[in-house]
Image (cartoon, rainbow, N blue to C red; front, top):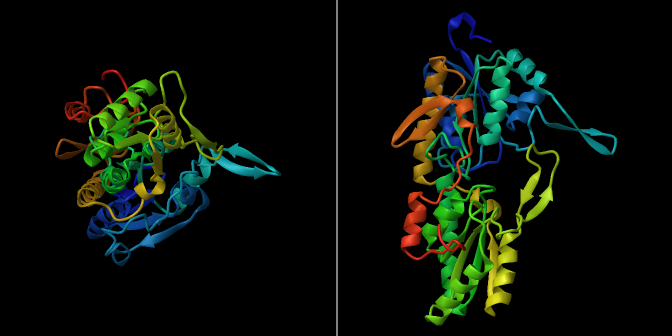
Length: 369
């Protein structure tokens, strides 16, 4: 599906997967320069749902003015809109069907020359499949989980870390006042970046990550030692995907309408209960949940999102399709989308944040990392 007359004239933009701060900044970063280059911009509503169901609006400059600091996405989003894994009611049951051909039909019907797809690992996997069907796509990496290997950081992560660190700051005061152990459960699924960076920024005493199964005895020992040394409270930051040695992740629910049906949640309560029983200390837990996705983006995410958006439209204008913008050091580069999704970025024992946390006495619930 090459652009007509060899020149890009009309593009679509969609925000797939879960929402996060910075999405509107990317939309603005795409639309403003696109209009300056004489391109028309179609906003596809509700992620890939809109591409399947034909829901879209024309985006003009007035639509993207004043949205830089606005949380969420003016286009709407959905993490249940995989065209290749589309839930369809069949009587009382749900049947999974493939509706990717409708994406192609709407893409052609709208007269699009390319689409800028903003999303995480799932969005990029879908984009790759649609590219294989002939669609021109440029990707922008978005996820609070920061689990895309091809970029040093995804936008949205810094904002989520800020929420976690702010929450831990507040938990510190109530924990110290009541001499309690406070457990805070954060998002991240199979990657521990939010817990690691948020816990480090907030001064957590124990950080539990999906990458490193933890020992109950090590946790009990850390909490008990702090108590014996006169530090009569402890803060435990636990990622939703964390699990004990020999144990399993805590699954809250399964939703077959999602490409990945597993919904994690509940490990914070489990950890709090075990600490209370194992250390005979008053323990409470807090689940941050979707607070980590909401609100205005941090200044860092506003800048990164704007850089990503403006770089993505440059790739489209130059017809460098099939690529995703990425942060490498202080530079915005581009990588092939298939390379971007080839490997998930997980926390490794030698990353600088782990080394720094170890140096200041943080425990990861293991004998040694």
